[in-house]
Length: 162
Image (tube, rainbow, N blue to C red):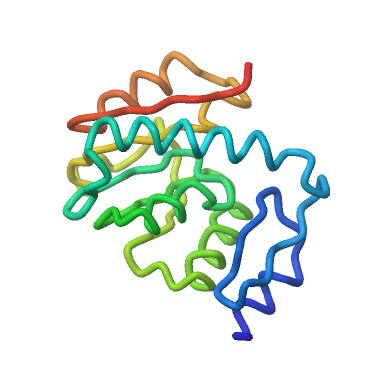
């Protein structure tokens, strides 16, 4: 087991990550939310497969409000050429970065940023913008949706709890 994997296993997570050794992270809720996460992932996969037929090579994805990187890691594993994960909170950026390294996801990058102040010109264009946590806490949900929808060339997926 790698040092990074040990660091991951020393923490309690919101998501259940399966690590390269086969070990699984402990979650805050003891698995009570696993079905919600799995259902969201299945909805995501259905939309992605309908749009691109399971072929993601050469595609760029942006994940806004990436939290701990669970959906970002999933996109990287599905074969997206580049996954850019962004979150406004320091602790989420640190967690997503740790997961990225522990899982060896070289196509995934993690950065800190606010949806209302992203350096859009420098970021380039994306095929997919994923917003699965963007609207809570709801400070400016309509503005956030406008920003998110303006980012991708092809598909913007939004799912949130209200």
